[in-house]
Image 1 (cartoon, rainbow, N blue to C red):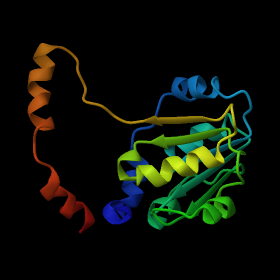
Image 2 (tube, rainbow, N blue to C red):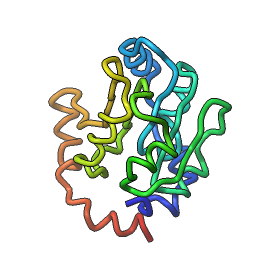
Image 3 (cartoon, one colour):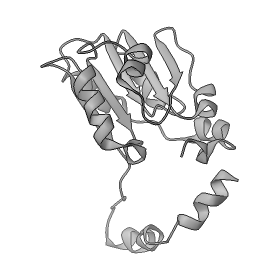
Image 4 (tube, rainbow, N blue to C red):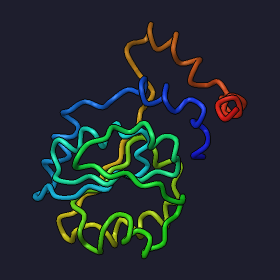
Amino acid sequence: MAELFVNQAKQYAETRPSYPQELFQFIASKTPVHDLVWDVGTGSGQAARSLAGIYKHVTGTDTSLKQLEFAPKLPNVSYHHTPSVMSMSGLEQTVSTQSSVDLVTIAQAMHWFDLHAFYQQVKWILKNPDGVIAAWCYTVLEVNDSVDSVLNPFYSIDSDPYWELTAA
């Protein structure tokens, strides 16, 4: 899956919507300490950039080296190219030690994960009892009946054939 946006990595980084700062402030309010975040599936670092303004250190991981090339270079953010599933020793070497992470974030990427393996890693790496996992995604926009009737047909289109074009 990491290869889906390789050809458009620069455009993806430049045009992908960011998230409201209020989202990050809300999430940060749930962690008593703001030392370390693991931003999983960081892509081109949209969430990592905002988290870097709140937490002392952010570690972003992604399976796409090309996406990571366009992530913002910030002094308290490190990016790592990783396999789709890391071993626990790989997790420790790349991110941190057991029970050391304040927050694990996943911004619009969880659908790519092996959830069973990922949840085991999260349980291992998060501080106990104060660690937080926060995942979010885009959703179907609902405005009102007249606008929804125009947009809804687009949500029911089979997009599978177009994914192949993205990788080309």
